[in-house]
Amino acid sequence: MQVEKIDPIRIKYEGLDADRNIVELESLASSLRGASRLLVSSGQVALTGRYSKRDASNEVRAYALPPQAGSYDIWVMVQPIFAVGAAIAVPMLPYIDVMVRTAATKATEALVNATVARWSGRSKEMDQANQVAVKALEEMGHTSRAAIAMAERVALSNHPAAKLIVQPIGTSAQTLIIGHQESGAFSVNADDRAAIEHVEPVEIGSERVMTLTISELDLVTKTCKVTVVGDDSAAARRVAGQITDPQIAQPNNPYSSAFDSQKPINVKCKPQYTEGELERLFISDIAA
Image (cartoon, rainbow, N blue to C red; front, side, top):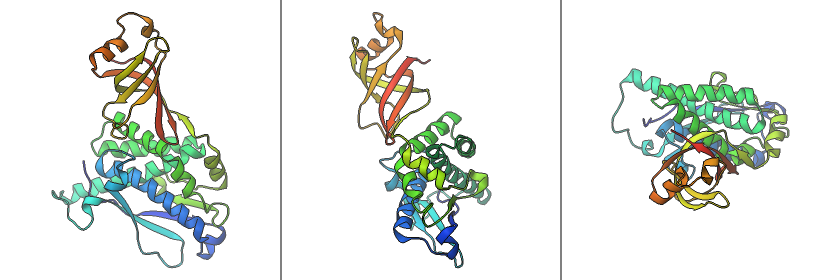
């Protein structure tokens, strides 16, 4: 489902300089650049129903709205590019439009906060935000499995953006809040900034089922090169794989059969990401 717009999202800086309605310019510029990347990535999922880091900035844009006097709140409007300067081709009924816009707004805010929570080590806040995001995406017609997969990909791809968004924290602002509490928003503080900036760049994702095409297979080292089927972000390149499934040592095993036939195969695996990019798959079993 493609959505024309979501409600404006607030980025609120509090404490230190921000309480005097000022924020140091260089750190603010970095923070807003990080916020833009997070909002565009999350907004792409909510507005277009897909996530591709490569295409996000070509499909969705974030716009700063006029500042409000007496605060250091920045309101951001996130829109798909097809909606800028043009009406959506098929308008929705008013009550459906409101329901979808509310769900899309919740999904966007929750995905942003889940990403920040993940890299700051706040597992409770990450789980709460992910639950909000998945529920909102389900209300928009996505399956739970697809919603969970997109949420994880957004988080893993945006560690650099999370580092940028917290730049004023501890120097010119004490805390940062993005969106509403009911969408998973929490107060990001100096401890969170320290954790985000010191997280190791290599991340191992949770086990999931993926559909692969095997283009290279070494039965001695049990390594392979694969292409992820249905993943726009990885469609243009091959990914290294390590097969730990004991079946690989048997004659006519499912992996060699898939390689010989060049037909897709469903596997259970854990992905390894480096700076948010899929780098390697650890394949443990065949999936039904």
